[in-house]
Length: 381
Image 1 (cartoon, helix red, strand yellow):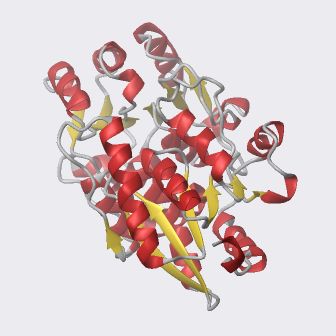
Image 2: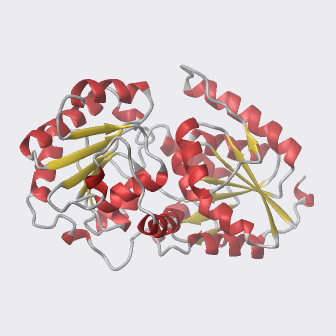
Image 3: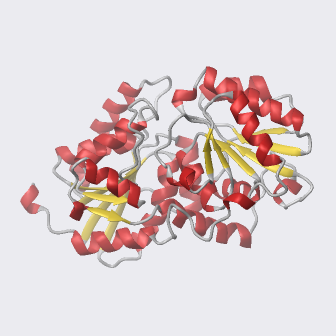
């Protein structure tokens, strides 16, 4: 039996890897071992609970006021100890987090095969997103199997010299997770204590704009500009509810609560569990975000997205008109939001028969590659 260690630490990784863990658990040929670093503690646990996954190992790496260097050094050492004890045949990581890079490097040091889910996304700007772009590029240099979500991602890898036979276009597992979540919430709609019940129950007279923001490169002036834009939109559209689940990072909490907490139609909530968050996206007329995963999810739901970043490593949504890059310029955010909110149906221009990010069968394809391709690794040790 093939032993596969799936290693992750943040909420977005968990969303995209939990459906893969469930798919692998169904295979009689695979023994799945889940290791989490706890890079996002509370938000990670929320997703694990939603999918019913209990980690085999929890490294609990987070420390107050840690630097990236602190986290990186401790993560490499901790994952290395875990790999020495668990001795998997393959390690699976996802995306571009510090956990992803550290687990990849630790697997390389142990000469363990590495599979990279969501491989090949690029902005060609090493500081945007920071530090994620470099985490992803370095992981690509270490990976043995590259599970690219799109043809564009595949081309990026080929241009960097990755062998074609090591690249597998699978679609993005975020769509698998999204379809799973939609089935659950439509069968049993969730409630959000911080919000009036009618917001999720579909009060057509009350449109909803969903806002998220957490990227490190937006801390400070960028996030304050986003908040000013949200404030302007709230005053201009008093009939619209603007809902902002606020990331736990103090660099996000302080400016958001200082600038938005007293506005009547702005609802600041705690970070939401995965299923309630998907329910909000499904209900929203517009999404304003700096998140990579949220732009994929919202686009897959046919929701227009204003992306508060200067670059995107997911240009497929821009290409089909579902995503508009607006940066952190308050005037640009307001101008684009006003244009969309003045439309009779803001979602009409972005509704597609299929998602640019996949069809919901990415996990099946990844499992098939692992089962068909993985060979005994004794020769590598």
